[in-house]
Image 1 (cartoon, rainbow, N blue to C red):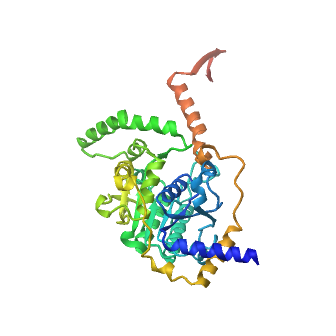
Image 2 (image 1 turned 60 degrees about the vertical axis):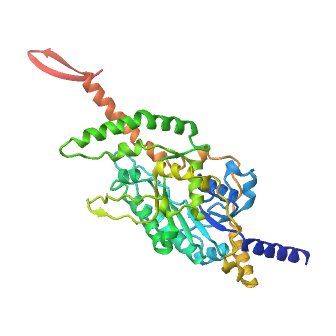
Image 3 (image 1 turned 30 degrees about the vertical axis):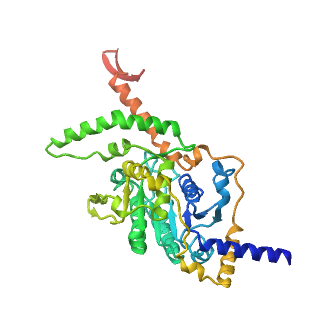
Length: 402
């Protein structure tokens, strides 16, 4: 009886505290970027719910106090294979904003063709596009009015178009779904390379200094030469590699600000277009409010309103105030069903916050390239020697490799 009374008190205390708080759900909240978004939202005064497959806080922050202010739920947003979207929507309850950090690019794990490295376009379209379309639908049904989607910068998208078409198709599907459901309440944050935390912080800073110095001069010089060429061709791989990386805390702060509506559309510049598929046909990207690349992200992150981000009580939200006792009980039941799936924290943290997980296929081409380079070097340095032997008046040729 006492336990039932205590549970009832906790449930109602959570209900009344939620009425005057701004609630944000972060999909991928246990990840490298998503966990920092959760931290920034908690620091700004939001009530935060993290959705991830593990349902656990990240190892790097498991002992920090802000983790206690986040509700960590285990769920899988994969359509038709993961968590029932109706159950997940009930578990979330009424929310104000949402963030999706779902959508990393993973190569095939098996060796394919000569170089070994390849990507499954259909799988990428599903894992990025269909999954985020499902997330958008769940968040809309839960009452969210703002949605932030993490995509890729213009230079990165141009470098990958055609080559890894499924990845960009998936990102575009997520952006279009967000725009369709949320209109101007949708926001896309598109960084280039992200570093920080335990994910190559020193290398990231060194590379940033190179890109901002010699790298910038190199790109400017090449652009000047291309401008006088009869048929100028952009090298987007070069521009992607030499795009300045951005610190993860900076990206997370901007995403958190977008989730609570602290970034006005007048602060943004129009999105650049000019994309093509692998057949050379023009592709129109969603005309959604867009924060493009490191310069835009750092410009917004330096604004005083975002540096000192603070959320006032959300007393105007009426849907929570009208939530009945039965609806609150159903929400707690749905949460309980999800919580049963939570796994324990691993005893050992993944190296570099999981940056290398599933990335072994990126090394597959190196042995093949090394073999070709060795043969080329041997030929260029005349390591193939031709020996002439004379026997019984006949001349025979023998080629040996020294």
